[in-house]
Image 1: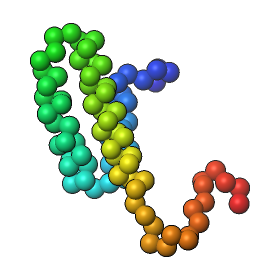
Image 2 (image 1 turned 45 degrees about the vertical axis):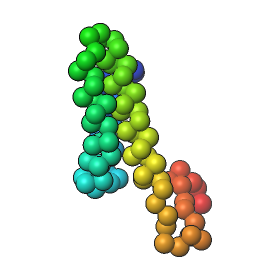
Image 3 (image 1 turned 180 degrees about the vertical axis):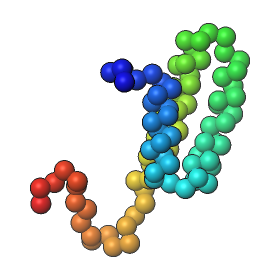
Image 4 (image 1 turned 135 degrees about the vertical axis):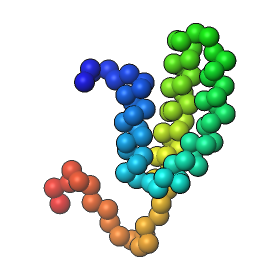
Length: 88
């Protein structure tokens, strides 16, 4: 893969990560919130502007997915979480 991923490759990677962390219904609900923004892209004539706006929309979607994922509170708030990179 090229060192700089295209916005399409980033979008596909995001979708693959989403499928690992949430249900289809949760993802579709978040994506549906961005539908009107994606549909509005049809009015843009310049491919550069289209790509720029498309990337903004998917960045917002990615942020929403991340916030949804990390906002889950564990059942026991006192339970420690160990990093996979931790030696302890």
